[in-house]
Amino acid sequence: MASSQIKALRGMKDVLPSESHRWHYLESKVRETLNAYSFDEIRTPIMESTHLFARSIGEVTDIVEKEMYTFSDRNDESITLRPEGTAGVVRAVEENGLTANGQQQKLWYTGPMFRYERPQKGRYRQFHQIGVEVFGVQTADADAELLIMLARLWSALGLQNAVTLQINSIGTLEARNAYKAALVTYLESHLESLDEDSQKRLQTNPLRILDSKSSETQAVLVDAPKMNDYLDQESKAHFETLKQYLDKAGVAYEVNPLLVRGLDYYSRTVFEWVTDQLGAQGTVCGGGRYDGLVEQMGGKPTPAVGFAMGNERLLLLLETLNLFPEEIDTTPDVFIALMGESAQAEGIQLAEEVRRGNADWRIHMHLGGGSFKSQMKKADKSGASLLLILGENELLEGKVVLKYLREDKPQLSLDRSELVQHLHSLIV
Ligand code: HAM
Image (cartoon, rainbow, N blue to C red; front, side, top):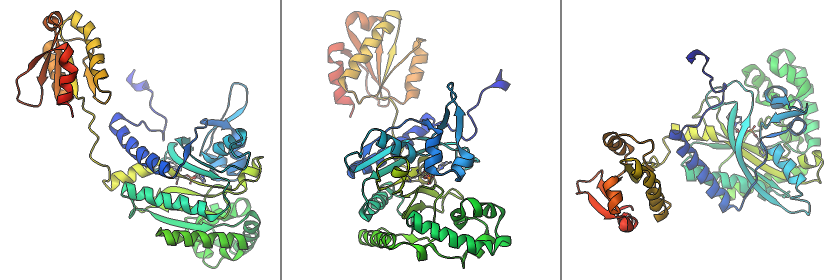
C-alpha cells in the first residue's frame, strides 16, 4: 500500500511536536505585547461567502483572481477558505454591532489562511497570520500606535535589527483615482517598455505596476507621476502627523513612494516590515488604513487600520538568526512503571494522585504493559529524573518505590500517603 500513501497537500505543512514549542514561543510573545496594548481577541470562521472576499479585497487583485480556494457547498453556495483575516473581521464587527454606537474596537486574531500560490520558502498555501484591526479611529495616533507596538514586539523577539519599516500614503479613493489616471496616461506612452504583466495591469489594476519586479518597468517608473503629488490635503496632513509620532517614539522608517500593497481596500497609510534574510519572501508583516471598507461592505462609515504578520516567515527568521531561547524542556518529571496486572489497574489512580499534587509536574505513566526490563529502558530514555515503581508487593503494602534516575542515591520505599509531599521536596 506504500505507493498509494496519502500525503499532505502541496504547500500545506504539518507542525510537528518538535516545532510546536517554537510556535508557542512566538505566539506567547505576541499575546503579551497585544495584551499590553489592551487588544481583545476575535475568532471568525475559516470559511466565508465568496462575495465577502471579492467585494473587500477587490475583484482584480491576484488573491481574488488567482489564489482563492473556492468551491460550492452541498447547497450550491459559493464558499471560500479565507485568504486573509480583515474581511471576516469587518463582517463580524458589523454583523454583531460591535461599533454600532460609535464604539472603538481594538481586535486581534490568529489562524490559518489559504492562498493558492506557488509554494516556496516562506510562501505556503496554508499559512498562519496574527492580525490586528482597530475600528473607529480616524486620527494618525492609531496608525502610530500599531507601528510602535510592532517595533516593541520585534525588540522582544530580538528582531529589531533584522526588519525595516516601509511606509507610504496612498490617499483617499478620489486622490488615488486622479493619480491612477495620470499614471495610466504616462505609462501608455511607454507601453513597449513595460513587462507583459504590467501591460495587462494597465487596464485592470495600474497601481500594482509600481511594485513590478521587472527592471525595465522600474526604469520607466523613475519619471512617472508620483502619488505624493496627488495626495489630498487631509491625507498629506495625516501622513505628516504619523511620521512625527514615529520620529518622537524613535521608530525608524523609510518612505517608499512605490509601496501600494496587493489588496484594494487600503486608503492613506500603508506599510510593510521587510527583512533581507529570507530571500524573495521578505515581507514579514503588512497592513494599513482602510477607512472606506466598512461602509463599502454595507456598514456605517467607520475608519479602520490594521496589519497582519506571517507566522511562518517570522519563525523562519527567528530560526535563521538563531533567536529561539533554549529549547523548552519537555521531558517528564516523573515516570511511573507498573509491574503486574493489578498494579497496572492501580497505576492509573497513582498517576492521578501525583498529578493532583501539582498540575505543573509532567507525569508519564507507562502505558501498554511489558516487562520490567523494557519499562526501565523506556524510563531511562524518557529523560525523567524520578521513577516510581508500583508492583504487586508495593500494592499489598500500600507503598511505592522511588528511584533516582539521574543521581547516585539509594532508592526509597515510601508510603503512598507520604508520596506527594515527598515529591514536592524533590521537584523544583
Ligand atoms: P498581506 O500582505 O496579504 O495582508 O499578508 C500579511 C502577511 O501574511 C504577509 O506580510 C506575509 O508575512 C504573510 N503571508 C501572506 N501570504 C503568505 C503565504 N502564501 N505564505 C506565507 N505567508 C504569507 C493581509 O493579509 C491583510 N489582511 C493585512 C491587514 C490587516 N491589513 C489591514 N489589516
